[in-house]
Image (cartoon, rainbow, N blue to C red; front, side, top):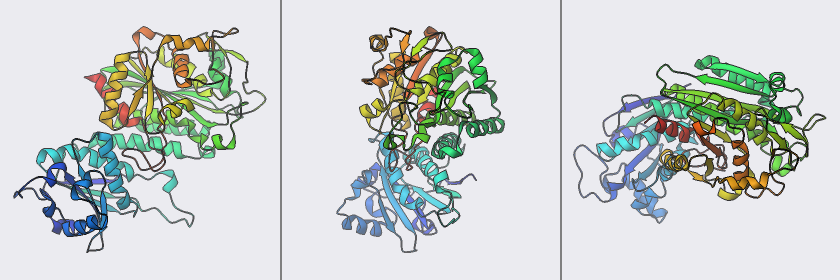
Amino acid sequence: MAIQIKQFAAIANEKILSTSSHLLIVLPETTSTNKSKTSNNLATKPETTPFYEILEAKLKRNRSKFSELAKTPITADLPNGGVASWVMLSSKLSVFERHTLLRKAIKPLLDEKPQSLLIAMYGSDAQRHSMAQEVVYVALVNAQELPQSKGTENKQKPHPLKSIALHGCKHADNFSEVQARVAGNTLTRSLTMLPPNALTPTIYREKIEQLAKENGWKHQEYDMKKLKKMGAGAFVAVGQGSEPQDAAIVHLTYSPKNAKKHVALVGKGICFDTGGHNLKSAKYMQGMHEDMNGSAVALGILLAATQAKLPVKIDCWLAIAQNHIGPLAYKQNDVVTALNGTTIEIVHTDAEGRMVLADTLTLASREKPDLMLDFATLTGSMVGALGNRYSGILGNHPELLCKAVGVGALAGERVNAFPFDEDYEEELESSVADIKQCTIDSEADHILAARFLYKFIEHKNDIAWLHMDLSSYNRKDGLGAVASDVNGFGVGFSLEFIKAQLN
């Protein structure tokens, strides 16, 4: 059920706020420096902040100052039995930092599973307007029901948030684009969190088909039989190890009549990754049902763009398979032929992601999109390079990478660009095939993987390509705006990036 947003342009006073059991008070950076109180704007200095005596007492107990609300939110109980969080948003902070502050302020409120949340914003008209989008986004995205929160061991029913009352700002479009981003992010997280027996390739394909019907997307599947006939040997090498052989490349299309650009999204959808013959240890196999996150990100972007009615044609290509062990599973030293005719020497069966993506990228590039974005939880070396606070990007145009870094800062989903020089391919030279799948020591594997993938893109000179290695898709206790470990990283970034291509 959608969360209702009730908007009130007027500033809320304490009498209004006292009617709420769960209250978020958002203050501007100027609050601590203004000298006077104006008639049309409360909370222009500390002592005029709602419930200031309670806030002041909590600040003293924490040995904090009012200005430190711009670093650490404060939560306290109210006389009416309710609870309030105070947070200060400064324009000097990055979007990521503001999202993080808001997440920390909202979390203790939403942890109590309220049915309604009152958000009161203060400051000038411009300040309140500029803060509103971020405040509503963080509130909505953290109030969504996710698979892990549907009931407990004693089978209690969840109590989802039903409404948000926003005081101090009124947006004519009811935050439609924010709600689209939340819908895409929630789809991404929900799919990724499902256990592997609840999202096999067969089940996943059924869910995608249903999504296509609900959203009016064109739907097409390339199953194993068809892929074998086409000569998609890289994908088939991975898919043939599973029983049943239910792997497939799924193609979805959103094509509005007013489309100004053509974008392709490609996502790695490995529903479970054992490592294949190069079997992972228990430590590294734990959580490998989330190896389909790249495909979930692509789906989330497609849903968000559809709901936001972006004037862009989107082809979404999902490489859905599992990496299992069996008599037919591919193995080290095999040589397979990809869809574009390139022969590949297999070096490590746990580098299956780049194999399924290779043929999928070939199919996507044959449609000659203006821009192609691919998403994958691809390499451990990217996590080693960045940790899980950033995701890494590589691509075939330096100016595209520069723009992407800026867009990441704007969206609150930070990315870092890596080298993409051709001489890295020397490490992938093979004596028995056109290219090695990877190297055995995995040095700079995040770069080698991108160089490998680039071999399978056709019409290279006509397509701008950006590859995202999703090292930050899962971070304990959340990242940026999102409090859940699986955070839906990439949806917000991509919405902003696609919009930037339209200007």
